[in-house]
Length: 264
Image 1 (cartoon, rainbow, N blue to C red):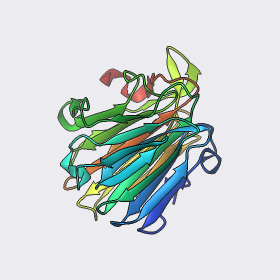
Image 2: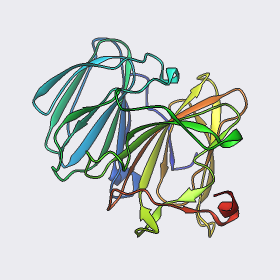
Image 3: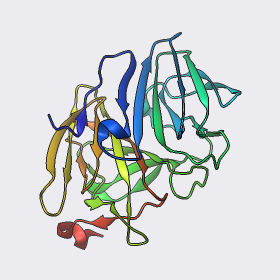
């Protein structure tokens, strides 16, 4: 298996824990909790800012010295309804107590203390289409560049219909040369519907020094340190992924792969 692909370790508790050190990069951290009703998760953000994404289920959440009540509404991610999320600055503590079985993603990147803790969504998050035909997919933007309440994080959800391509036409964001391109590390947390399904993700550079094609399963995380990174959902399997990006500046600018430039 590629060292870019991470399988969940276990089915309960903290099942993913990707740090800059473990990924071999500098900015993005991603962890995931799968909790049963009554289970607790708690962490300190340290030097990172954090967005908690309620992927599925409900949890009572406190953080940054405040009780945020019960967050979460959708019980199955493929309902495609907007997620409930919580932004926490660096130097915060948080705790979640599961009210139902739930899945909580912890998206992390360096914080500068420039923003207050706040709820994100479900209001003001609208499922929107990107692309057309077999390249169409549907986006829930949680904290992209237009949302100015983060220091570093860029976070979005993508739903790819069965038989379609996504993160396509192939593109890369692995150089710090704004406004032409920005350097952004990226993680993909994949889900498949039905859960026994599979999808594909390729991560490759123009010079071929990195060229990995991975069969992704429900619950896998793929790290994209550089290069292009398209995904495909075979006929019969719907694909979801949660993207986390961060780099030295909070802008998303990319360059297409030479072979697909005519598609932009």
